[in-house]
Length: 233
Image (spheres, rainbow, N blue to C red):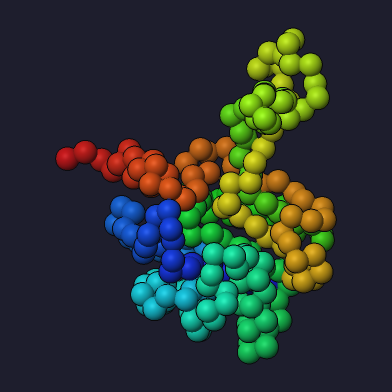
């Protein structure tokens, strides 16, 4: 099984400018993900960074990733999807180097992945031919306790009678955490989505692994994790 890892890292970020190269602890944010990918060794055929930014490209290459080009402008906009970015990288890789069986999307905003978790995801993928494996985490609230606000009124997401529900009686709910997307090349090209077909959960139980940095509050949380791991002098 030949798996190509793709790390998408656009230069522009409106909520947290420059986040991909911002220092988190002792290294730029993107380097955390590159190192996780490289630690998988022979499980991957390459770790490719797709970016439109020369500074990100330089840092990624120095960290050991493959950075063969700068992403074309039409794939560096706010509206460009991860699927489009991954297919662009995949087409180049297969046309220039070798065909691959599957693509692993690793977003640079999930710095605390454990290698053991990544290996578990690859194992689940190998044991479920044709299925995709997605990183998920348990959510704090079941949708049965969530509401929409429509014309100023609270409307339950679910039709269940909420009056008798206790939190311990609710079913477990899971949400994508952005840390792991593994799909066959055939399925990605056919569905143009990571979220169609048979989906296998890679359940992340460590809350730190589930951190997905998108806002300044997320960044402060990640820094707190780093501080908690650093021995005080």
